[in-house]
Image (tube, rainbow, N blue to C red; front, side, top):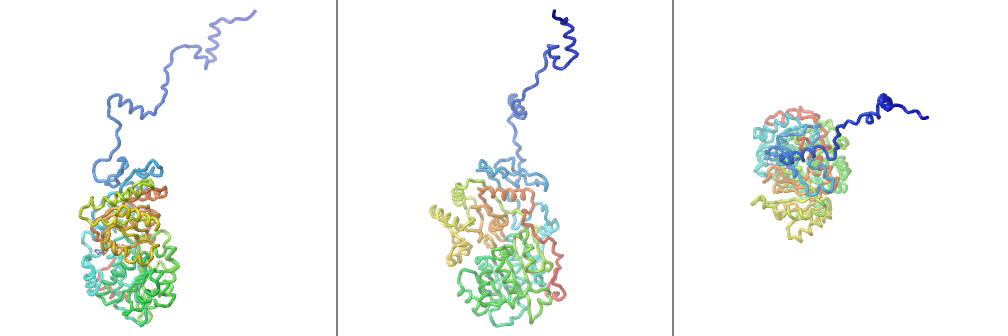
Length: 569
Ligand code: ADP
Ligand code: MG
């Protein structure tokens, strides 16, 4: 007979065991947990809308001037804000590697109306130097005469460039040490007047140095990386030289050795020679010229000249030049030695290493602008994310729009491409659209290349299609717009290209328009955007010598104290 437990005993036993039996034990209704099917913020917004509330708000910055103006307003940055050094910045270009970002754009707005202007906040740059600069930009700085330039040189300057009245920041810093015979490294932004800052003091020193030999042996040498730049420097030096009775000659590559030989042997012989490394190297090899009489040697656009493509030639030239090791060597009338000057707007990290091969870095006095490698605050810089095939249409549109925005302006435009073939190809397209233009690229025959930049400067045509050969040093105050049809391969190239607008003496402040198509372009754009938002210098191209220049003593005739000043810093 089967044992049957009473039902109340069974229930009691199950209750003691607990756990899963509870449900069995009690049938009371339990509160059901909510099942989440959509994200809570979305749910809340739906509920708000159902209640008749307004649509979700986009965080639009308060009205007012902007530092960054983005197509998506949430990425705009008001002028009054600066992103902290370690703060994460909301970049408008963050998603630009994705093809769906095509059509997006942002611009770094113009925040200063002066040329050259100052960053609103210096960030990493020395506050004291910026304050000094602000003081001087207001016209409170010394005049050229107070820097130690003689009346004869000042007259020559007045005749050559009547518009140049007050020295720029870099001229105030570079002229006095150069007059004292120091070796100098001058790193200052594009268009800040570096050419005059070395020509004026060096020509003045040349006046005191007699010519010792009769053959072609210039007493001053300026090396530049392109023949267009050598023509430009020759023009500036030549007009100064006229007033000082100094003969300036120029040798650039591509015109054949006959022309080089002629320039070097023409009477009167050159006191100052402006040359490209290739042409001078050939002339030295053939013993058409001697550098033994050099009183100074300038490397203008020194970072490019010390780049691998030129380094061998430049090292050879430096080897042939009698660079002074101390002041006594400079002043020796029977065995004159040369003063070394390096000038540039970008000095990439590592250039110091290269320089140490040619001179003792300890002997260099340095002038470093507080704005060096900063995004130019007086030039509007727009970045447009595009598909490669859309670039031509955008370009044509931008070229046709020129002048419409600024009626009465010159409307001169520089269009930069990364290769000579793109310049040619784009040239044919502009021809089809009947847009008059000039082309300048390195693979052109020399005869074609000669004078192209000059005719652009003179206003023969308003559009110049070019490669980076036009980005280094070339001066035109007419340029209003730089278009990076191809985004530049490095940040240095970006700085140099952008530096063709907003120069000292420019008619208008100008702007830069960059087409961004490749993933590697986006990396550079993000660096530029971040530097602009943080108001810091661009990364990777820091000035390698950071010590500020010792305070300048302004005396009426600085040449007097040269006997007592050592060449070392
Ligand atoms: P950088 O070599 O620094 O790029 P440049 O020497 O080519 O600049 O000079 C840029 C422009 O500024 C030139 O057109 C030059 O005539 C002009 N300039 C130079 N110094 C002064 C000055 N003190 N006042 C006015 N304009 C100047
Ligand atoms: Mg220059």
